[in-house]
Image 1 (cartoon, rainbow, N blue to C red):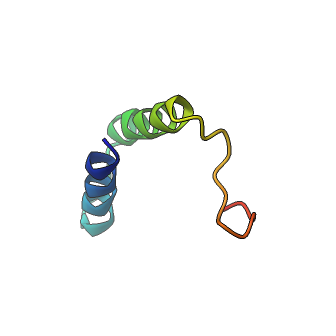
Image 2 (cartoon, rainbow, N blue to C red):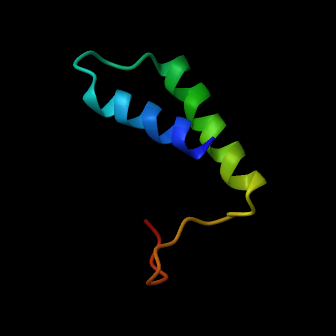
Length: 51
């Protein structure tokens, strides 16, 4: 699952046209749902700083 999410964000970063809002909103929800399911309530670096 994480590989799929990573590949999709790479696609978005390499796009020359704008991303459709509803499409990106669905992607964002998928990412946040995944992180929540994995028990990652906050995203922090190994140094404890939020990013």
